[in-house]
Length: 133
Image (cartoon, rainbow, N blue to C red; front, top):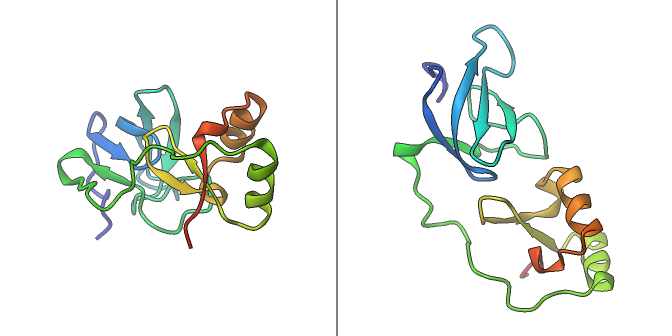
């Protein structure tokens, strides 16, 4: 039985990418079984296993709020702001992390490309960091 097989419209959820949200639609006979609207306005479809319909995720990123344990996630602030040149270099070497709207650091390849490009265009380099080995 899948994690969101009994999901109902209005259920409160927490996404590791966008933070708090609620289920606004349920699609029982579709690949993406729930549509979630997050507090920051994003709407994202998810499978019944909690995998989003965008990005390069193979693991569950959405949970019911009552089930969330964020003790293993990294919310630490950036220690050194990277230059534009360093961001490009780290991105090419797959050593770049981006801070998601929820505050969690994830590999830039797992982030929505539009989100990353928007941050780069606005020169918000404080939302990027070099990934530790």
